[in-house]
Length: 341
Image (cartoon, rainbow, N blue to C red; front, side, top):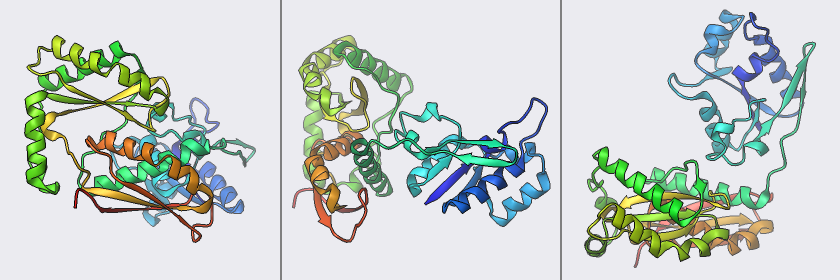
């Protein structure tokens, strides 16, 4: 298994007030992880090469590719977390990455803590992942990444707020007001070139424009779905009245596996940005061990993806077991042409 070494965190370990980050800490970590059977990858932020104690040796390691450097102007922590997610790797670091816990909700199960003393490193163990949450989110994350590669706009997770009808209405008003102040226009250019059945979708958009200015997708945990639905009508009226909209916005409540129980998020789009049919449906091939669980949650997966893409209808999510995927948690995802036939 790959383990990303958070170079800045490890190099700074045990450093006194006037001491420089220590290159030997990184080499000790590399050797220890190798002995444990891991495949270590050192990733350093752009400033470390200017701070490290042995600058020439460090730069030579950079040149030879033994150390990777985060692109200048990029947040190192976010870069490391993203690479770890994409490569399903662990992270050797004592940083809790709290700032990114809403976006990367499996940090605790990825992060490996450590201690360094007298030139030796003791490597700890990551927290055990919550399997139910972990595998569903991994599947949804990969699906959304695949949709992004196809050129579809994906709503990114932001810090959620505690759920209540009035809280949702206030947040909706704030976001719509900000979009107007920023002069954001509907993103029509190039949109329909990606959508099958152009005429049908155009008819749907025309109808939406007659009834609403905005569509508010309320993203909630499946446990909160019914309670959120009860407030949908009141939210639409409140937002429409407060903003003096000609037509009250449409409010669609969607299960969202990235949202914590008791919290909500919003994906607010112009009515003419809505897509009725998903251009792609999804085929998930899963390990036999997880088949029943994923099959049972296929609707929640579809809802999560629809909420993030701003789709009226859920993509079709088909789940198939495979004996070739030998370990629990393994899966493959394929996007297939969607829309009505």
